[in-house]
Length: 267
Length: 267
DNA sequence: GTAGAGGTTGACGTCGCGTCAACTTCAAGC
DNA sequence: GCTTGAAGTTGACGCGACGTCAACCTCTAC
Image 1 (spheres, rainbow over the protein chains, first blue to last red):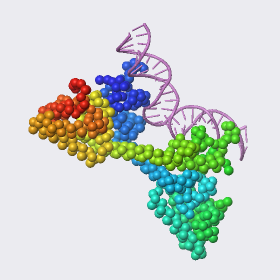
Image 2 (image 1 turned 60 degrees about the vertical axis):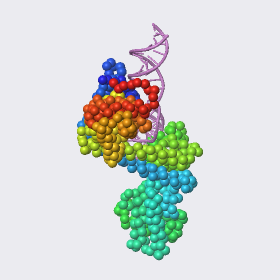
Image 3 (image 1 turned 90 degrees about the vertical axis):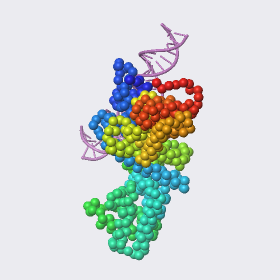
Image 4 (image 1 turned 180 degrees about the vertical axis):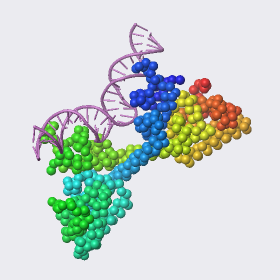
């Protein structure tokens, strides 16, 4: 029993083009009587085609399929490996969908966000180093901004609330400590600095994120900005408070970072 | 403030190749002093690039991005449309993963299934029209076999059990009716035929699946096979039982299908 | 003079086919 | 014998978003 290319295509529910392709790549060689003549397929070819399509439906690539069919490659093993990448893709998709959903929600609530830095206003509210987008962009890459933005939009409403809460508490504690005239070198002040560093390191995309400590230059650069910019200073009880924060962070940096980097300022 | 291609690439966290590509497709045109000279990017370009990358991270294609940025296309609307396809993809992925998982499980339990028709033995057990793979393949396309196989592996363990239970009950009822000497034209027998037709129409991939009734030729062809093949006949209480089933299905078909198809046998 | 860094254009590869295009072969009908 | 149509063939481009050479130019520093 033999079939023409069209017949076997109908039997298997694929197009003849697909069969020619499989022939061309050697996945399903056809029998030819004359060179350049019509392709013919027999029963073994049909069985092989069925297995190919089964595995294809499971998402395997043609190369992997050939490997499973032609070599000693264990089928179950191949599928388990395949499962891993499928699950990764699934996770990626889920995060992306969450991100798109939050973006749409933000756009509906506040159409102004169309302006580019979506939700920048909402992100950390009144404690938003992304307001320094321009400066951050030029010194640390707008990549940082984009990454932290993506990360933020991936969080659930509740997670965002918790995050905001932590940040606001930190801001208040800074202001209180400043008003109380705390010594920047005191344990109390240094504990605040550690929380601050923790916070920064926890925002993906910022220099040093994921490490134990944020990038030293980034931390000190921000400290300077807090003092230099009133909008920022306002979060720490004004310029005086910001000065206290800067001093404390400098002491913290001097102690926390391994020595040997040399002198450095943030002009 | 202007940047070279490398500088803006670092700022945005992409490669220069990407920027050249965006320039080539007109998504992010670069400024050139001389023709063929180095590309330069200014602040507006950087802002635009940020928006591009934001949307890209959300999974939009470059064409859609250009549409959103350059025309009056509503961004939120575009994202909502995009969400639909993302969700579809998510569903597809989930089904595929379920399918792969069941296949792996089947392979681990019974390595013989490597032989091609994975789980064919398990599918409907003792009532398995896929055992007629060869005949089915030639008359109705192996496409049918593959589709029903995919569908079956997509069901949960419980759903499979339920399905099997229904099929076994049907099989028993057929055998009982045959033994009792029921009249094929009786309401009782015809009710069984209707259940049988329902069952067949419920298996995706079979001819007529999804319709109210399965394909007439398919139904009658199966009826003949039940009689002709002992393995099948065994499900209906042997050849005698199968004959009863065939007669009943023929009466059913004569009544249930619109007339005008003309005479026809299943040689 | 020469090495190196950074720029340019052009073109191929990826993955699994869809979709022409141009041509041949074979059988049926006039 | 000629036309027509159906079915086959090979060859090539296209898709999407770039990665990855290759070959060449230009500027600066030593």
